[in-house]
Image (cartoon, rainbow, N blue to C red; front, top):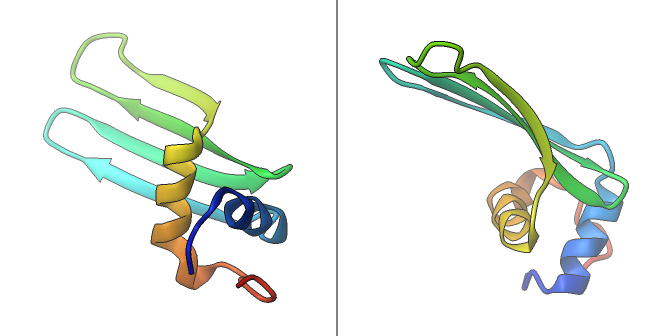
Length: 85
C-alpha cells in the first residue's frame, strides 16, 4: 500500500484512538513517547529526563507529515486498513 497523503488521512480517520508508546533509556537519560491518533491527526507526548539538573520535560505536539508517514508505515500491520487500497 502506498501511503499517499489521501491514504494517510484515511488511515488517521479510520484509526481514531489508536495509541502506541515507545521507550528509550540510556545511562544518563530516559524518554517515553506516546503517539495518539485523534481528530484526524497524530500527536506525540514526550516525557523524559536527562542527567542535567532540572532537565525533566513533558511536552506534546502534533506530528508533521514526515513523522506521521514513518509512524503509519511502522505500525501499518496493527492499524485498521479495511476499505483502503
